[in-house]
Image 1 (cartoon, one colour):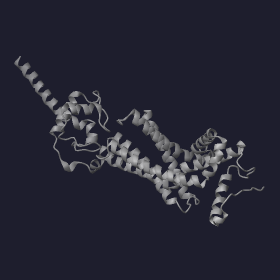
Image 2 (cartoon, helix red, strand yellow):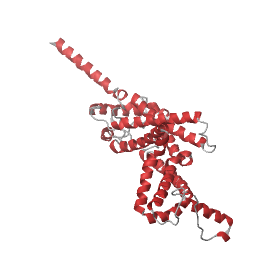
Image 3 (cartoon, one colour):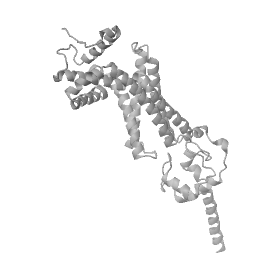
Image 4 (cartoon, one colour):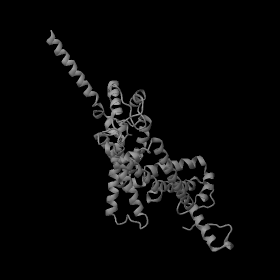
Length: 373
């Protein structure tokens, strides 16, 4: 009997020792280490060694998540293991030198701060784009076209403009009619980029904590496919830059190439962030994530200053042409009977006014245009 009791006692002691061993090794075998570093001194997430949180506060963060940290369910980390992790963190040594530089920079990139940075960058880009559009509005003679649009009807004018922006601009009808291969490559960049923005907005709504989803999840798969589409389209553009002698217009090629390069780096760095998180290479994630944010911000800020502004200027100019054609075809009394190039009369008026202005004040007054066959 004594032998049996001794044997059972030894088993209990062994189990207790084994249990203690497990409690001191939970952090290093959990997902916590991936973001907070091997010694809990930070990585993608903040340093949590010597945590000053109470256990209830700690458990609340674990279960509900915080900022970019996703919630951890009990099935992934039990309450007992969470308590063991908490004890380990309290026991870990605080070593200031081990805090990664990427985290020291990244700690300022809270969701709120990143949102503010991109808000300022976007406002700057929008203002620059509107100033540019104002120039092209004037160059297209909008002031001369406006009275005719009022006569034709503003509702009809709005319909013509919207239809043109969608069909001629978004669907790029002219390129489809002339070169379907280039339309496809153009579409991969345009629609892929739109898809990435839409996908990111959707994730912000449906999965605000940015918790890792299965690769087959539509929220995860859709942006990946859009990103590959953009890269394929960009590769074709770079090929054209290298092979087509007529791409260089002598004015904007350098800035255009900068835009293409920034877009390429933004997509690739985004892929790297996702891939490294999935592979557990978390020590690199924050550095690449900061680089990704920087390239996206530069991409937005430089867009209004390169030839890629044609993404919004060309559809606007085509819409003006369609409006001019609609005015002529409507039969509205617009002050002239015949025009060889439908919809261009308002531009001819602007040219005539500029010429008369240059000639001097003695030529000011009413002017009349005549068209000859």
